Length: 111
Image 1 (cartoon, one colour):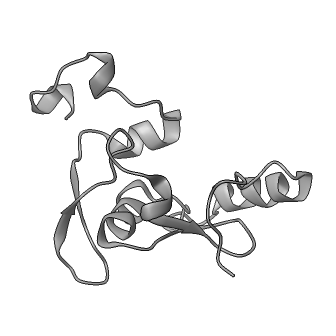
Image 2 (tube, helix red, strand yellow):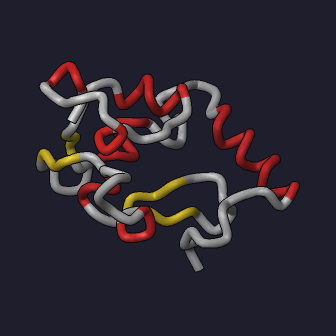
């Protein structure tokens, strides 16, 4: 729970995130699942497993939500820069894939 919504700044309530994701997450705790149009909680890395809600595309450049929580989180945080004219994160990921740095081996990928 964000401090601005009554949460605390203790380690149990914090999660490590890059500036980009932290800025987009802001103090949102719910999002809209684009498939069902229902409001659902956003992914909580302290309580949930990444692989239960997300998968990488076969080429490793996009994150896809596989559950309502995953889909809503992808949209809310714009994981794939789909609201931008230039999807710079996909370009960066393409370089990382070519270098063999990405995606993490433990993360699921489309077959």
